[in-house]
Structure formats: C-alpha cells, structure tokens
Image (cartoon, rainbow, N blue to C red):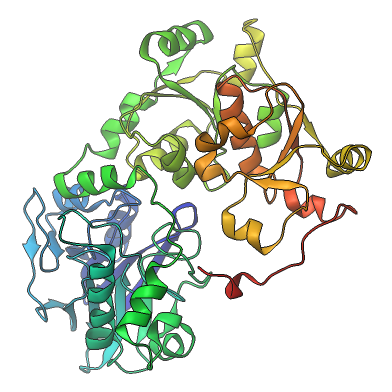
Length: 472
C-alpha cells in the first residue's frame, strides 16, 4: 500500500494518491489530471476510483476529466446529486482497492453530502481517514457554505457536524492518521494548522472542536462565531463541480494566444477584459499597464483572484513574465477562471517598447513612513491585512481596510491627501494599490516590506495579542 499526499500550497489543498496491488484511488484531485495518470503509468497501475469528499467550493476538482480519461468511477457520499454519472455511495459502503478497503463514513455538516473515507489496511486495521472539509488539523469545516434551503441554517449544519464528529470520527482509534483536504490559508476554515498530516489522537488533544466535554450548543457557538463571508466565487465553483466543466486542454488552447501590444490593447477595449498582471510586486510598482490589476503568481494567487475578481466568466488578459503564461492559465483554471483570452507577447517590456501609456505605484521603505508620521502624527495609514492580523498587533495610527473587502472601503481613503498602505510583507498592499488605481485613486504610497519592515522602525504599535486568544 502506498499513500501520497499531493499538496498545493497556493490553494492550501491536499489531494491523495493511493495505490495497492496495481489499483489506484485518487481523492479530491486537482483539475490538471495528467500527473495522476503519469504516476499510475509509472506504477504500472490503473486508476479505479475517484473519491470526492464533497462538492468543493474553493477549487475545481479534476474528477470529471480524470474519469473520462481513465474510465475510473467517481464516488460521492450520500446526498450528492451530480449532473454526471457517479456512484452515490451509502453510509458504511466499502470499496475494494487491491488488498485494502476504503469505507464510506457519511459526515454531513460542512455540506450535507460531506463524506470521510476510512482506509482499512490489508490486516483489517483502521489506518487513516481522508476527512475532506469535515475535520482539519486544528479546526473543522465552516458550516455556512451549503445553505440552500430556507429551513437550513448554519447553526443546523454546525449541529450536523457536531454529530458527525462524535458519532463517526472521534470513536476511531487514536493512531488513525488524519489526512485533511486543506491546511492553513484556506477559506474553508478559520483556525487551521500549518501541518498537513496528524494522528487523530493528537487532534483529540489539541483541536478545540474535538473536546470531549463540549456540548452541542457550545460547539455550534464556537464553530459559527467570527465567520467571515465566503469569497463570492465559491458558489460558482460548486456549480462547476456538480455540473461539469471544459477540459483543461481546451482552456489552455483558448488562453495561450500571444497578442502583440496593439492586438492586446484592442482586445482589452473590445471585450472589457480584466488585465491581470502576475509579475513581481516590485516590477508592477515600477511600471504597468494603466488600470491593470496586480495579483502576483508567486503569492497566494488563485484564492486572491477568486476573492477579488469574483466572476469566473470574466474575460482575462494576462501580463506575465515570459514562460509563465501557461502556468498562470492553469492556476486560474483551478479556481474556475476559464476566461483567459490571451497574453501580452513579450510581456510588459513589449508594451513599453511600443510606446504605449504606462503607470506606476509610488513605493517607499518603512523608514519613509516613519519620517512622515513623526512629522505629522495625523498621516493617514491603512492596513490591508486580515482583521485577525490587525487585532493581534498594528500601528497605532493605522486604520483597518482588509484587502478582502477593499471595495467596501473606497470612501475611507482621502481624496487628495497622500496616504500610506501596508500589509504583512508587501504582496497584498500592491494588490490593493492596483485596485485603488484602477478606480481612479492615485494618491497612495505603498510601504515596501509591509508590517515586517515597519516593526524595525520606532513607530508606536499596539501590544501583541496572541491570535489564539482572540475570537476566531
């Protein structure tokens, strides 16, 4: 038996490849399925099953394409209603894979079809659970993403989740390995660990949601407290996962159209496409196409695209470093953004060489902010980190305007007076700067290095509060 976790950092997502006696199961695959197929060929094995823990909201799974390419059966737990052919398993149903068994444990709560898969080894011993979004390390799945019926509230779902954990998962042995679908950074939970594998016994000791003495009412209150609104692209990804989608090869063929600066400009004007610049923050600051949006490929790319562009059908034109265009289109497709219609051939250098109009972002070291605040204590400073980061510690003069909700804060920014913006390290503040400039707000100054650099100055900060002591 071989179990491999295939972890994708930008999505904080874990897919799983399980092989036994030449038969393979893939759990929650990513949309680009060739790596799983290549791995099976290398193992001289056949992909027999594709297990889906639920209809994912934060990414588009590769189940439809992988089934078409391999003939493998897609398996969902009870309550699932996909538009394509799939096995809708019953609770406790078992599937043989070589000399091991995968058992279905219906664990509703995150969604009503949410299912945990229990792997039983060749000796009949419970070995591991693939818990999807039911159980994370340090947290559990948020219960507010599956409210479709008026009579179903997030409190109802949290109650189902409480029962699922205590009836199906907590009775399992402490040495059972927990393989979750997500880790820290995913919007599917609020307090996830940076670790990606643990034992169930350790989770019983450390995960607040698995406290043995916790009542259902206490669980519901803790799990639903402090939930931020989910990204607006989530329902669109659920729809694609339930109804199907184009093959990634078709998406790549449409998107990898190399456009000259003139053709790129014409396409932008005729289609209303978002110009998405995925270069490094420093390069974007030095020069970019006016009204383009920066979301760097080397940061938390896909989730920020989903959170800030929102409409998965929005046409997109890319500005990328040469050689990274296909990678960018692939990563966009992971979160359902299939609308890339081309990229700027030769990158931004070709745009500049063609004599086209450019823009820039004023970006200064933290020492410049320090001078400005010491000169005028009323210097406007805006912190675009998440609310929890701000609550934990911030500049005394700063105002919280989280990037996730930057469009709701447009009226907070001074109309004429210069103001400073920062995040933790400089990535998110450049995204925020690009959004503000695209909306005609140009009197901003980005702080290089973000709060990490600011902490090296003598600017007054609030006392640090450990995030674990704050309400989640």
